[in-house]
Length: 208
Image (cartoon, helix red, strand yellow):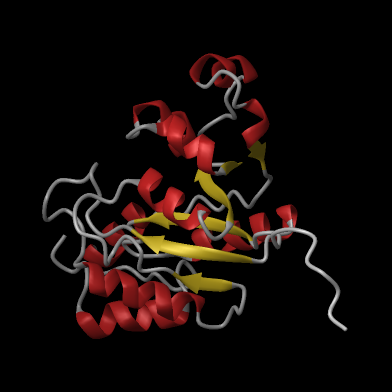
């Protein structure tokens, strides 16, 4: 006999790593895996931005290339998954809209670098994000963790929603990778082999 239900089932705990991923690199992957392990998350959703509101029109690589590179990069990790939620939604890719939609189904932790976390007060309705999800803050080369007083002043009452997670300080950036490709330099070991192959096959970043 099936026992009677005792309440709603607990939501699956997931991490959300968003970004333009132009291109995705080993830093993204290493950080995502460290956060998943440290916080005991079931999986990590990689969410490529469709139309990043903070980027000028035409400043990013066409979205289907960026999606394809994410798919190639995460193919060998069963705990990683691509989400097209921002790609398939029209209009600017506001993180809070994505998080609220995902929070209807999942217990969401948003993964942010220290650099991005410090920019959070300038985001579109950031307090809605804290209402829907927790935040995992990971290191970024050249940036110190914010003083606790900063968080209390910026988002009073939300301190318990933030976790600082130690993760690799790899010093790899998409901007640097694009510059290396444009200069004809190797990106071996900076991106997964499948991503390097995709970039070469489609001639990406050569003209920048």
